[in-house]
Length: 140
Image (cartoon, rainbow, N blue to C red):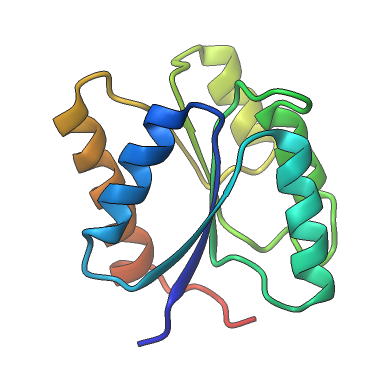
């Protein structure tokens, strides 16, 4: 099985640590990159597109510095070569407006981050199980 390349776009260091640890403990071999703001994510993806080494999945927070998650999602889904990458919105928000806007911009799913650490880890493990054990992703 090939390594799964994940781009985590998150500015909260605690959430980064928990997410990376949960993914590393999973059954799938992951390569995890982190972008700490929306602009850094777009810059990374543009370089990855040129180098033909795109992530298999993007975990995207909404509340980010420089460029918020909605803006990042719009750019991704408007860019040929990037729009096929599945994007999971992983946010503290449970706002109906954020949920609707995410789906209108073609997010593949929206998950509100659980507050409890155990529940957060379970959510990340569920993402990994679903997206890498059940779903068939395109080859690059």
